[in-house]
Image (cartoon, one colour):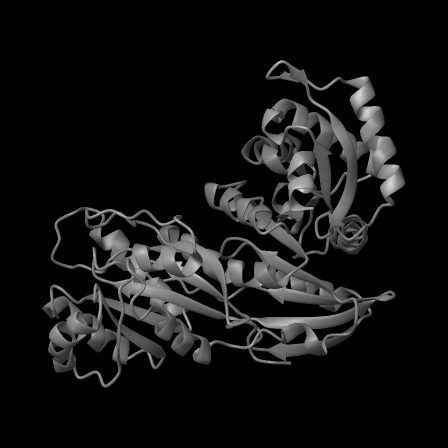
Length: 448
């Protein structure tokens, strides 16, 4: 198997050099805030990107600036430094209009020590005339290859992206896996017990196991056979702690988690029974849903509260309150230390995966839709009763259904929630999310 599955690319540079604008250009979104005020991008933003059929994760960072007096400067610098540490490729942006600064010199010296692929990008170069006028000043930095671009006006953008594409890892990691392998990623905060849990699974079951070093940096993927199924267990251990910044650095584990999440079918999010559910846990849980992954919540270290019924109840209630948006997700209590509850994991993975990949006949779906509408009439929209004509499944992982209607804009979220619950109940999809896509029948006629 290849050593990695896809690249992590970090955008790094001083404040206000155009990182967020370039992030939006590459991702074709406007998720990164664009503002002339230094420090607007305080935390990192992540987005998956495909360019020339290659997938990579793009990370937008706050600016590196030691001279500013803003109290957030140290936080921004830590964010950027961790992005540099975790990334495979770094896009270092500089301001073509302002010219090279002492801070640029300092960062370049820092980047030279990383031994990573660096693209030195001079932004705000709006055309060939400006390139001829402004680029020369940057060669004093001792860089042989400079990339002149305008993130705002696209000048040089395609050339930069093609150059970046040449350095990206080909995404063919699944090509050599056994057919129908279920990929399971173990996610969570540092020291929550991800590696211990995988070790307990591998040590307590009679399985055929092969280790694949380096599939995700600082982790080991375990390919195993359990019963009649093959599984790839993806460990996301390896986040490095430094000094007293552990609370801040918990945010940085998301990078590794996102990388693993991109590869998996099912995400197992571990929560520490000693700490209870935290804000970071809910963020990781949220990312699993952003990526439409199957989800299992696992409270590890249950042995610490095995004799405290009140504490057990509080932990479970807190999880329900903190993550009500994933009330469908199976919740297990386990102890990687003594093996408690581990045997329930594979049956849970199996039942969830069957729902995650299940397909349904159109006739059964139409009966379900008809019964749902008869039992609860759709609301009135613009003096007309909403109508639902037919439905069909258009995808799996998770199950996706299209519903044709006379006005998708008129469907209130409460009625959408009602239909979602009816589909969930009628189809036996109690452990996974599902997606209902409403489309106007008139739009279909227009396409025809």
